[in-house]
Amino acid sequence: QICKFHSGLPSIVRDFWSPLSSAKARKQVMRARADVEVGLGIVMLAGALCMYCAPITVILFWNVMMMRYMMSSWTQDSFQRIDNFLNPILMKVPGIKQGYQALKGWLYSYVDPQSKSAGKLCTIL
Picture 1: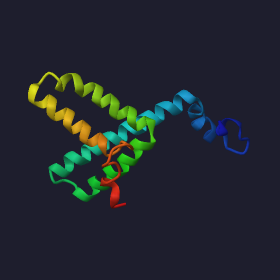
Picture 2: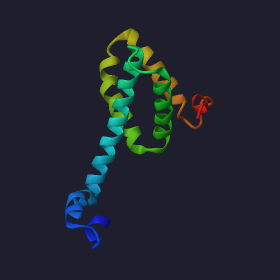
Picture 3: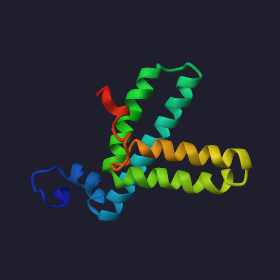
């Protein structure tokens, strides 16, 4: 909205950024940002397991992602969509079903404000 009505901006800048002035476009950008962050975290985790990146960078990134999850509805939505994709697939396999539910509960306990373990993992920052 600032770009649309600011007379001091050159027209090329105003024309370039004006599509982002709509609320729909901003929502799409925020959703894409959250998806990219979660995807990057998964790639970094795989990279650490294959010894392509340092484990400390993965730990620090996921600490930031825990804070993002607590504060950003877009990040929560991104994780929810991943869960909605994985849940029907993994619930069909008997041994994996219980492990996935336990992993989900354990990971959620770190971001749940009512949980005793909330915030304990994020102590290095």
